Length: 334
Image 1 (tube, rainbow, N blue to C red):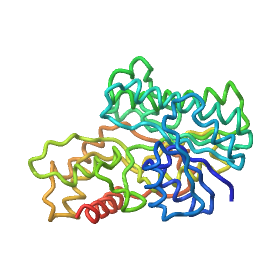
Image 2 (cartoon, rainbow, N blue to C red):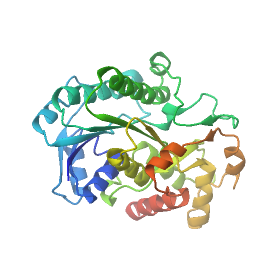
Image 3 (spheres, one colour):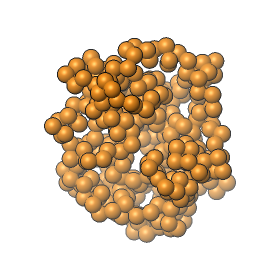
């Protein structure tokens, strides 16, 4: 099997992708921001000899991936999953927008210059790159052709807007690069929605989980008097997100497509109802049971049939995702 490079290998989706690649027999080289993150991933992967890591402390640095690509001519594909996803930033432009956009540019330029043997590049975007502004309009149908209207100027001054803008801006840069530079590699982008699910190993349940996992953990440790943020949108299980990256890597139909991942629509109430039913002993926040159905009916419609046809597998439902995640957190936190 060939060698695949995965940027941001210690991240939530990336670590699952690395594990699935290894399970399929690939050799994987991953970039991480620090030795501690690399060693934690090595431990979680049970010391699999087909995995190694390199440290790229800042993907926005010029030539950040030059040396690893020069040093590893055996790399035949590149999965660029690294991108900042933190809301507690003090400088949204510097900490979110620039790394996402410049990091993607660095990857593509390094491959073009130093890795002509790479035949497939997969870039992780987000379903927020494929949204219309009016979320609550059921007469609108979203599909793979829709693009966010976010601009650099509209995104640079607020942490949430910076994240929502970083994804379409970085993804557009990638598609424009392919159009203008005509590289030897084929491009696929993967656009996950809210990504929930367990970590690849209990050892990765650290004091602070990744942003999307924190959403579920906050609900899990709520009580009837909690004041919680209300989340709405689409969700995908992290294991399906990783699986989609493998299809993007290998499918003959995937190149030149945006694969948008949505198992189902949900609201926070959807999760509260699962927690209440499956874990009644926890006395979590109850909200207004089953009110999610009426709220979801006000959302835009989704038609990601092209994606489903290319992927060719059924998604994990929300209940299994929540239960698997909660069981792991309770097991480790107990």
